[in-house]
Image 1 (tube, rainbow, N blue to C red):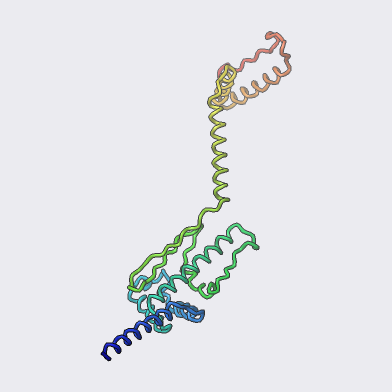
Image 2: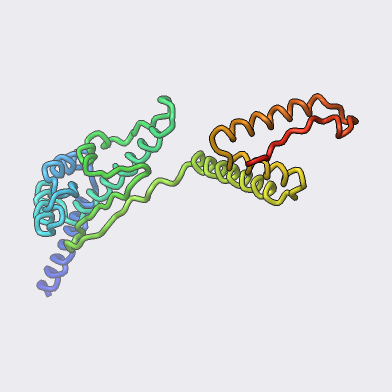
Length: 243
């Protein structure tokens, strides 16, 4: 009978101990977060994606376990917290870059996140492009498996979208104008003008110069004639001889 009581008390003690341990490892003080950041900075294999050991699961697991011993926390808690810190830093960095693009100095975003400066050591490992190239973060979970977390590219700004719309409207207007000119009916004057222009293009050397001067002289003489003048009064000029 006494054995049963002792066994129950033992189980209750174990449950309480587990509860205390869970509460201890799932709660982070500012000092613990700072220690986690400092310890992670010493271990580039946990954040520098350009390193070969970043892809080595065994090395990464070993380093995570070392930090867990320093902080007296579970490996899973270390993984989760480090993932959250990296994700938060990525979000703050994107805000800063978004405000820098096309904004005045007064509008530049200044991160108020308390760990932003301390986390800046991972900045070189963050790949940033016009617009923003995905940053892939691989995190080891409690079972030492890899999960991929991908940053979402920045949405296009309304200003860029408006510029594209304006450009498309201008192109449509030019195409419409060109189409209307092509569909315009051709009259006899247009045909004759094209004929004269073709003759001028085909002429070579001195003939081309004489032909051009003759056309200009004829146009000047015709401009002096009245609309009611007889055709016989218009001086004849042989434009197309030997052309």
